[in-house]
Image (tube, rainbow, N blue to C red; front, side, top):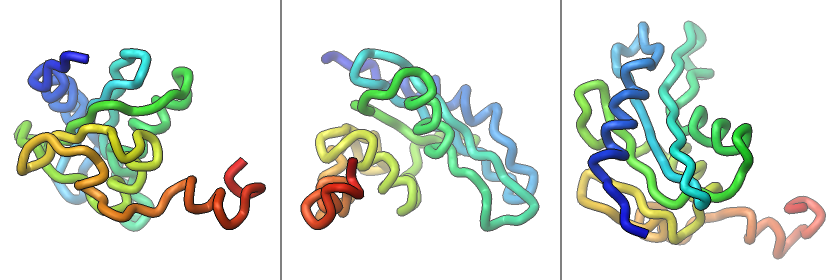
Length: 136
């Protein structure tokens, strides 16, 4: 699949423009492609109870599932200035779980598979090995 990473970054910038970040002043946008070619977007949504803020990747994964599911194949996260940023640890886990080790992420040091972004990741396959009924 030939990916136009700049188009994907522009979609992430558009999403960041819709972020609700009145407390941190740090809007974040994310855009990704699903395995069926759908373009998905997310933005951070802050809350006065800071700990329950939703990262942009949370909205992205919700959009993935509400629009039909599948797997993420390519993603990029940006700040409000349109600069590529690295997802936080929680969001790396979300991206890994919904894209797998082969999903490609444009990082601050180039495009990398999630297996490099989150090496030795723990995911659904690990749960299935110890408790098959939990993973189903």
